[in-house]
Structure formats: structure tokens, C-alpha cells
Amino acid sequence: MTDSVIKLMAGLGNPGLKYDKTRHNAGFWFVDEVARRFSGSFKLETKFSGECCKVDIAGVTVWLLKPNTFMNRSGLSVKQLSSFFKISPEQVLVIHDELDIGPGSIRLKSGGGHGGHNGLRDTHAQIGKDYWRLRVGIGHPGEASKVADYVLSRPSVNDEIEINNSIDRAVSEIERIVLGDMQKVMNTLHSQ
Image (cartoon, rainbow, N blue to C red):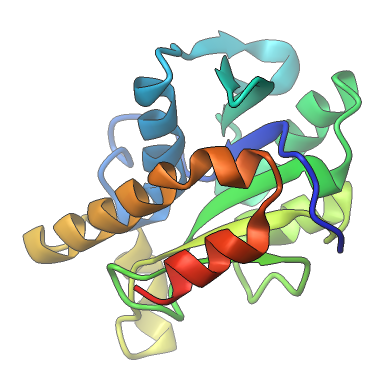
């Protein structure tokens, strides 16, 4: 996949206060931080099945999206907004929690499988797999049978600090991400 300007950043998570601080909402935490830094505010947009915010980053109009469809239907919201504004999958960055890397680590990649992540599975079904992903490490509970409870619970204080630090590092690279300078961003984020 070629480098492309990013016009939509979709943070994955579950709506509602019950899920707000859970590991599965790391994608929401990321777009909330981008909105805060660029003075954006989210508004519910029913035609996009989520909360949306428009910000200017490095001269590019970027949509921030938090689907309110719950994780397993996240792709619907991504498709509705990207179709309406004619944003190609290559111009979409999906931010999600990642079990396969530890808290404090964050990885940028393009394409690939969904790895069993229900939000990515639905996004694949809705727009294909040629979108960018920012994988926010949350660690793994050690056993597959514990994953559901783990992702829907709040991280330890130390893990939450590490996750927020990784989000801060990635948001510090946001202009290069938006402008499509992905290799430099990967070199920076993956070396930390």
C-alpha cells in the first residue's frame, strides 16, 4: 500500500460510561486526545452511527470518529462516513487496542488480517483491509478464555499510564501520519 494522506481517524471502542476506561476503548482515548490537542469537539451524527469531529491537521481536514455501534459493528460507522465524504480505505486510520503487544508499545501498519479483533473484522467486511491501523498495546491476560473479561476491564494504574504514554507519543507524530510519512513514523514509534 502506498503512503497516503489520512482523512479519517476512527478510534474503536464501546459507547457509554460503563466502557469508557476499559482497555477495549484505547482507540477512543486516542481520538479524544487528538480532538483535545486540535480544539475539536465531538457531536453525535446519526447518519454516521457515531460521534464525529472535524479538525485541521497540517492543512488537511481530518474527520475523527467514535462509532456508537459497539465494537463488533464498528465498520458500519467507518463505511458510512468514508462513503459520504469519498474517503478511500488508504486514507483511513483505524486506532484499536492490541493484545499482542504490551502496554506502552504502539505500532503503525497497513493492511493485513484482523487477528480476531471484532472491530477490525467488521471494518474488513465493510471497507476491505487496505486501511492503516494504529495498534495500541494493552498486553494479553495469558489465556484465550480470559480475553473477553480482560479487554472489558480497566487496566492497572501502571498499565494505564503506559498506554496513555504510548498514545501521547503517537499523537506527537500526528502531522507526519496525516501527511502520509508513514515510514518515518514507524521508525520513530517502533524504536521506543
